[in-house]
Amino acid sequence: MTMYRARGAVFLIVLCLILFQTGAALAQDTNAVDLEERRAIVWINPILAMFTWYTAEVEIRLQKHHTVGVAGTFLQTDDGEKDDPLSEYEEFQYTSFNVFYRYYPTESFKGFFIGGQIGSTSVGREGREFDDNFPPNIVPVDESGSAMLAGILIGYGWLLGDAQRVAVSLGIGANRLFGDDIPDDANATLPVIRLINVGIAF
Image (cartoon, rainbow, N blue to C red; front, top):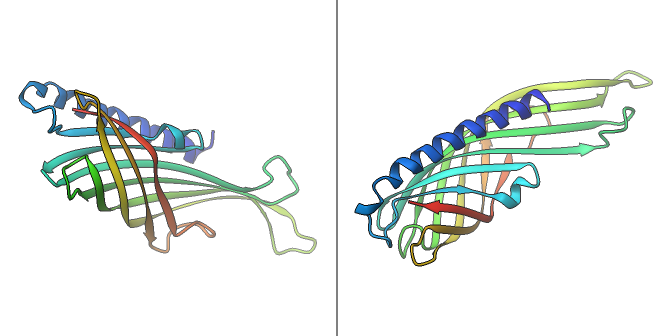
């Protein structure tokens, strides 16, 4: 496990603990909440996790049509032949934290929504590349940087069951990174994919 991957994993573990602790605290007051007006949802995406793309977020109802929340993401991408020591290879790790706002025309957590987010991203780049010598030599690559992010998300959500405790959400969007401190070849635009987010509502 690389240093950046370990840092991203620790970050998301801590964030998940905070989110679930928040959800547990909200659940203690469930008796005072109408089942059709859940106050918060803790979200994860188990499908993306299988592709080294980990996300976790907590979304809180402000009013009937408005929600806010916090989210964390760790995404790893690679390019090249990692097992071939004579070829170029690079691996990127994007660790993001953001706050978001969402608007639901029908009702919070249900139906169509549109929202935006702002935050920051830490980007790590590791691997190997050819230098400028002739003949070229393979040299290791290890660099990191950070940037601010801003993005948009469009999607659709459901609360399922009689108790409306299980939540499902689909959506797509993008985050744009701002700043010159990220490694070379890093993506300046990152996708936001909710396929399929599942959550527990409180």
